[in-house]
Image (cartoon, rainbow, N blue to C red):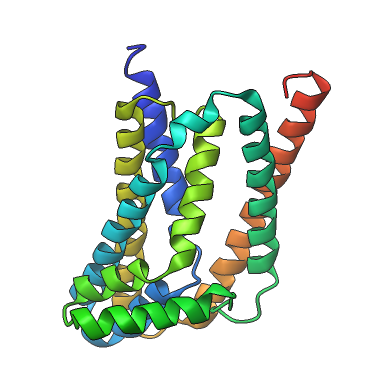
Length: 230
């Protein structure tokens, strides 16, 4: 049982992390599902999400590769905990204060150019390929997973064992797919009720949740500093 506990913890951490960040309704995938799901139905929308989930999982797996060697020193763990706090707080306020569903970033133009180049070469016609390519071209997704993976390991929610990292990646796929399944069903059955206003409201809720999580993380860091654990 002691051997399975780290694996279960890693799987749960990956699932929750993916479910939370996939449900933040910003970016091309959620908007594509929103637009296409109402017109082409549940199956088409879900396969867009499935393609996105596969590429999301690949980026997560890449992020975990080789990260374990950086956590031999306590200073690195402390630095990643602080970076995680700043990252969550930044995203939280960005989504909470957003006036539109699409929150522009400096990476958007680079991602759009990369997506255009990839689409010229691959010519995705299926729903799965559309979702896969759009996440592949989104540079922000890779950066986010590098930060998230590093923080999961810094907090010992995912240990250095290959089995734990594999379980976390599996949890990420399950969590991401679960969100896109819910979104696709809601859009296809909502008959226009599940629109951008709903996504904007969810975005604000996600922002508040991220801020609360960041404050909890900040309090934990302060406590560890007071106890000289960092």
